[in-house]
Image (cartoon, rainbow over all chains, first blue to last red; front, side, top):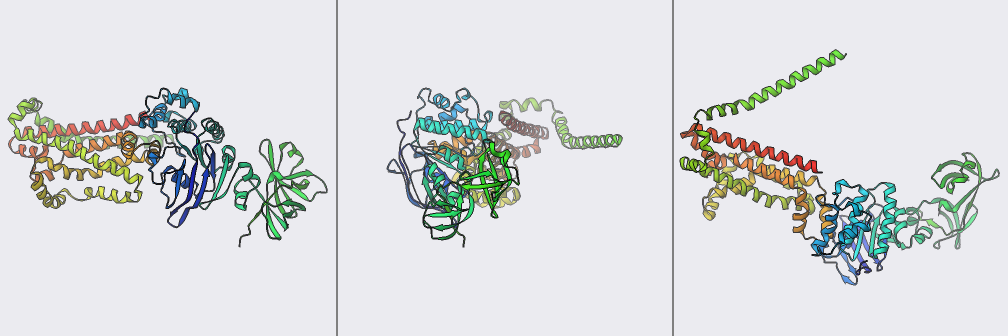
Length: 346
Length: 263
């Protein structure tokens, strides 16, 4: 669709401080041409600052921003050629959806591009809403128009700053699928900032988990989830049980099962981070576990069990729930998937 | 119980009407007196609406009306040119300055006009020197005088929209700062800008102290002068000026309402 898609982006040694807070601490990030990278992290980890520095809306104290090999660090936001969708509704209230989409085109003197705005609205599934004003549209529709407006100018890079966080759960899931579809279709290099791990894992080609202004891990969604490089990543992405274990060599022994380690660690006692889906529960009168509570989550359910005075949360198929009433004796088994260790707090 | 409630409601209604009647008499009685007095001579009102004849008969009054209208228009333009970009810029880039700017803009409200004139007199000696003694030079003083009202109106307009996000969205689409202000922010604070302009016009049309003490002419100064020679005419002109101010305020509230309805 766009002949300008596929521009590589390189954030190089970015630093930014607000008072005593290091929002960006020597951040390095390479985004491949046409790639969708999601920056994920808790509030204040610097992910939005990184995006705003790339957009030119914020200045970095040090470091460079390279787009397609060109240094754009000194360029103002209006000359960076980036489309952006904001967390807050950002459509111009006095313009219709179509006029909003045309705004950037007109500034570029491309008013004559016939049907460009209409085509963009069609891309986001809102061709019938061109004449509506923002206040006549739902939040989800407004964000779709904002996406169409950002893409209409055929930007070198598409920046999405938590675009779904103001929407309700169902619309959020729907729209994130659509963002993925459109991004794949258009092929624009995209940086997606979010604090919602599910969202990041669902849309991104690679996920960057940020902590205190730095990238803790940058890998594919599956890798980030299955092989977190640190306790922080394991803890932040997905739910983890903190189970006591003994490290010996490349394995840690947890509840009598030896689990491989993601990274090597010193021998001795440690806390292993085990995913709920890596834990199996079967009713067994001789089992040493006791079901405490269970909660139905749809296709799967979450069951809390005590084993040797340790609380274990397991994810089981909802079909098993009737046999796992509170008080039931159960046998707990662990799948031998690689686990990370929690770093002891001194 | 129902009887007690009904009794209380009746008392409230009586009280409400009593307040309305007292206020109505308080405001309308002087106006009625003005209407009565200014219509004693049947030639007064026809003369007032006949501009060529009026300017022949009362050249000072005509000069005052023209001066006031010019002052009102120019003050509104100067105030908007100064205040709109400042208020937007403070919101976008210098939020920590907001309280200070607000305080500075409210200052003229706390300083009595007479004190303001004492301070302005030496400044106007220089204004006289460089720009001459035209009545239009009052525009500078009036711009300061209207700041409290105009700033409030514009600031309220800016509070109603997310200026920062709109400006950033426009910037990322390639808009220069001028484009951001003219094509994105201004259309969305139109009613606030109109309010500020109407308030300015109403205030300037009613200003007397500064013009009189700085030896300039405007509508109120000429009415005061006229009062000494033709009381009927001066009262008629005062009434017309009042009605014009009412009309402006009504337009202002209509502008506000239509904006709300369109949202």
